Length: 188
View 1 (tube, rainbow, N blue to C red):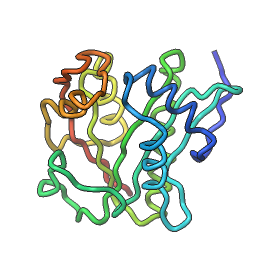
View 2: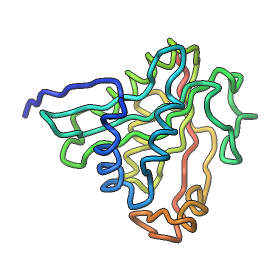
View 3: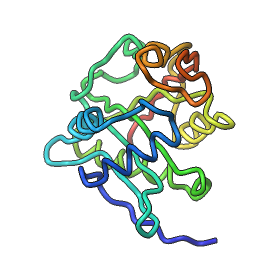
């Protein structure tokens, strides 16, 4: 089956549809209007937007949230002492989400490649992410590895604090013990 997809830079007009898809895939409390605005602004640098969406006809079927280098907070889940590049040159791949009905069409990889191109224009030379190891079939780690990602460190209970604060994990609900794979992609 061949489908026509429309990739474009993320704009505030996409927020409601992103929140709906994120809630469907990741669970209630994953993102709201306030956090969506914050995510969007962290992706803007030098008039370049590192976030992308993809539509099939009028339906949002995927999105990629990427924070520009130096516009995100390195926290306790980041093992920057293990990174092979200085932290100030690393963007953060916050979230990649594809509607279940549209998986298997290369959408996740295409969204990542578009974000990498934008992040490079912003000055990044690498990107890091925390991938959800409990994704169906560990697909998040598999796709990121296929796109050149290398494992930096594994982080048990990565989203536990968020679940106690109201995030409803689709697997663990309000007591999340899912594991994250901290992975990095080096840009050419």
